[in-house]
Length: 168
Image (cartoon, rainbow, N blue to C red):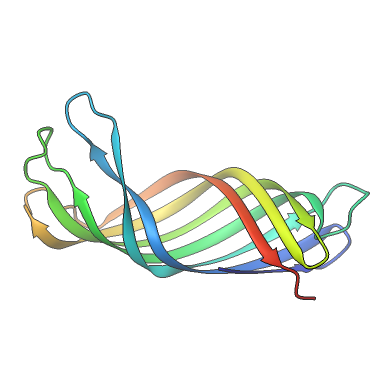
């Protein structure tokens, strides 16, 4: 991942994000009668692009150091491979698909960025909302419940820790 943050005033900065995607978590469905959600980690191929405007309200620090409030936007294009999706309640008619996902989203974050002589630690959290377009590409199993292309709004929670190097 590459994140570049540039102060634009003493209180504001803008950042740009580029990330390659190699793995993704997928909610497969319930695991059966009385079962809860079933998550799996799958190989993926894709990328994320993003940008944020950060406001550093505290007077004792200047951007990009200290507590901040941020608005962020992100775009994801990813192919998640080999997702095992359960069929009916007895897990009959299950299928393996590759999920082709496009997402665009935004969020409101709060965080704290620590600056040391040559490295940076950034911790952040906040709510977000994204619009997802998803298509199942059939690999094997039953095609009985194969989903057509879906369009949906999805809420999300940002929770992050970034460790980096100060270049300038």
